[in-house]
Length: 223
Image (tube, rainbow, N blue to C red; front, top):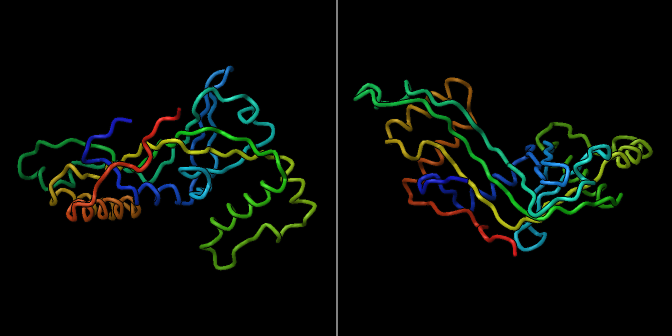
């Protein structure tokens, strides 16, 4: 991933992005070609040397049964938004501004393991459900459904786990703009209802002012 120094990601920001309740794209290179599926993942930092991303696929999805060649990739995406040059104070000063796009992303590489095991899957779907239901006033739990029904649903899926070997991450959040331009971006995004990206840009500005920067924590290529 092309990452200029001012868009490098601090290790804490990488961890926050991986822990975020969201879906991501699993990409594998197989003898039949490149396969990709978007699916929700749970990040488990306790697995292996660098943690793991755990998810599941429909049993009818051929991606789990096609052998992955070399590394597999999960693309985790944070908030993203169009940035209008009209938000920059620099527009009024000299007009030398153009549109851009702000985003946070991590390319997570690793070895893909398959878990066709009811116990592993049961633990996984409970953890995944609890993660996403946490914000509800009356959270739904897996055990709210009939046991026989859940057993049937588990037979229809297969677990996948990306054992992380390296991460390439990037936060492109207007860090290369003057402070007055960044303030305009935050205000413009907030006015358009892009609250998440507005908050991300504001945090990036604060981190920059505090000198908090650094590369993502895992850059080792697999042996």
